[in-house]
Length: 418
Image (cartoon, rainbow, N blue to C red):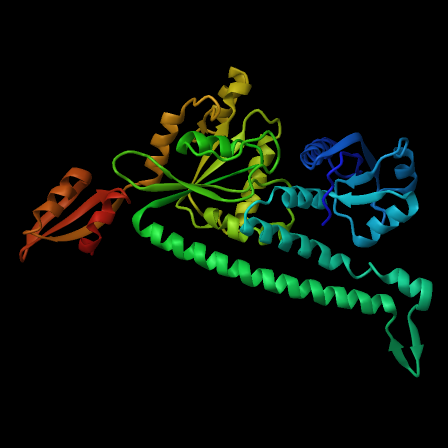
């Protein structure tokens, strides 16, 4: 995927079918403009076409595209996925590059990848995006020179088809190599996590892109993760210790942000980074309360968590950026989401309460049956100090107890659980 260092000018085009919500399409176009800005491209205009059906040839109508091209621009960016043939038809008809929303995201990822792991994941996502678009890339060779022809009853492949197959095999080989390397990385992550899990609990920060995950991460851990008012500022997962007091070991991980209509191949490519969310004991699901579409963003995040198999992990819903909204908005959210925490990561507002709720969520009490030798007075005293004794009896030199205790505390008594 090419890097574009010069400031390009773009027109943004969306198609809203007559049975679709125009307000939702407007919001999607606004988000596309933010993505384009993050990619270092200037938006010269945004246009939405209302029509019965999308054009198989050029996605939006050809007449509509021509009307939009009132001024000279470098690129047309569509708010929906284009097929390879649609992009090439547009470029041929209007002599301007055409890309879609997914390619904008890929360009951002490409420019922001810093670590070896992130670069591998971005390259894998690029290859998976390019692979289905190869089929029609070289068909012009067949049309212009040879075409598909039949000889002696046997179909003969044209040059375009042969070139397409060569390119497909090359991409598939590269995909195989990268998947193998990422598989080793995931295996290493899993091994490290198993070691950590024996000694501490794991928290994953998830949420819509630009919701303030990295700001909160820095505030809680004194880390120096990059914070920008841009989409996808964080691509790599970063892990730090989190001090909850009481001598407990907890680690917290910042992850890549989610976004509406995130293509499946992008999610699949970033499994190594998202592993921190998949294997967490608790997820902090962070939402930007100042965003008018925050309810939709909550659903978008839940959809991605479901796709990666993390929807069953306990969550704390956090509404961030309370410093940017009125008191009436805060009160409405409190009423609509009674279990949520309202914070300002920037100002540190309500973070003490958040830490208390994290500790409480990680340490939900359960009932356990213990059998402790009477000579193990240290364990018996610990049980009385850290648990609530529901039943106790003495039998054959053992103290048999039913105790209610937090999941953190019971770890020190694992040898006595029956």
